[in-house]
Length: 77
Image (cartoon, one colour):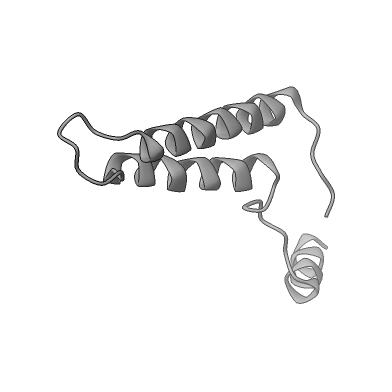
């Protein structure tokens, strides 16, 4: 996998890691009422952090297949 090294993507990756750490902290923190730990807000933060990390690493970028690239080249001629 070719990792993009733009500064915007690196900032996004750092923010994703910070959001991931915050979600783990909020999930593991015991509430004041004594219930078992867990919080759906923390789970949502976890999902957002994973998606941000995937985007920062370029996993959600469009990569045309060989057939699509050939078709685009044929149309350009």
